[in-house]
Length: 105
Image 1 (cartoon, rainbow, N blue to C red):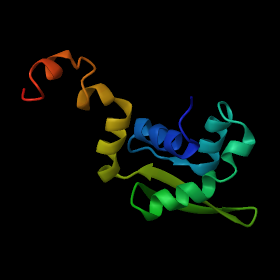
Image 2: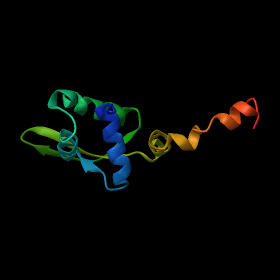
Image 3: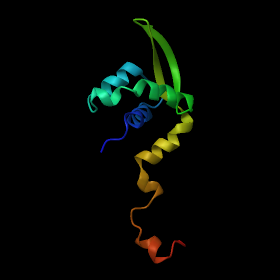
Image 4: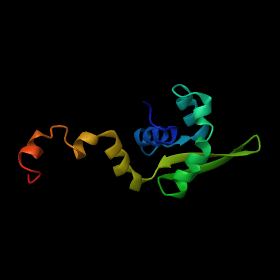
């Protein structure tokens, strides 16, 4: 099962680090993996992620009467994305040690 497009977008931005990406380029990348109907609300999702502080808007431009944005993952959101990408670091997969000690390791 694929993650929701907005979370996949955040992961792409995580890997781009300081570069960031224009929203139309991000759509192009995600179109390779998601049908268009799944991406219909992505632009609003990106604005919402920016509003809550996950993304920063690095640049604005106008194209055919529409405002387009260049996004970058906010530094404060990096730990959450790292958690999403490497769950084993935070939740060990070998629970036998924890169960053997009653959770008092």
